[in-house]
Length: 245
Image 1 (tube, rainbow, N blue to C red):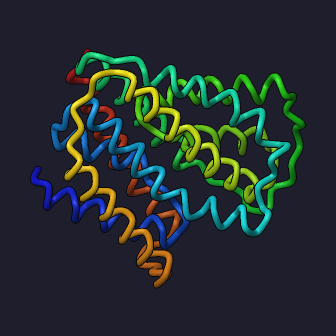
Image 2 (image 1 turned 30 degrees about the horizontal axis):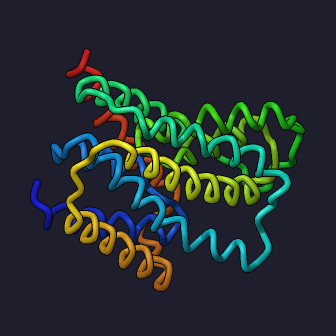
């Protein structure tokens, strides 16, 4: 898969995802793994793209005073050091692909679970529970190279912790901080960085995301995009599980 193909895929996916308010980090990992990139490149590029996708949303949430800091800090703060630790760990290709495959399959299953936008919060999760959730997902995020929102959001929705809107804001902030921490952890090890490739794909995601936000192109419904993404990451995940066991 050439860099031009990657740029086109990243641009299109960022535009579609941004148009319906999604991030799409797991899809970037699936594409990069299929492209045969080195593991350290896959993790680094995916996390950088995560930051680019959610940064704008987090800034908007902050300006609108929509971030419930007191509620989400126990989740976010403890996740940061664990995402850093996960990022520090270097995995062999087959082991990483197996773990990534399992992660992608789980992510696909979580994607297809419907979310009630007007759900009423039922459970008051304790600070210890929130810290445990944050640290566990944070470690996996840093290890695999995902933001972690794809696990956090469905988990909190299942628990009916808060409204869907608050959970969405929480997931965006979680992804941002975990992605930065994961990158910091990766950079503690010697790593071959292709600056041109990172800048090119990052620019493709940034432009695609901005166009999607600006034009609000609803070519596909959020449900359809989730379903198509779930199929993509599930197929890739199963493939890597079967070829690395």
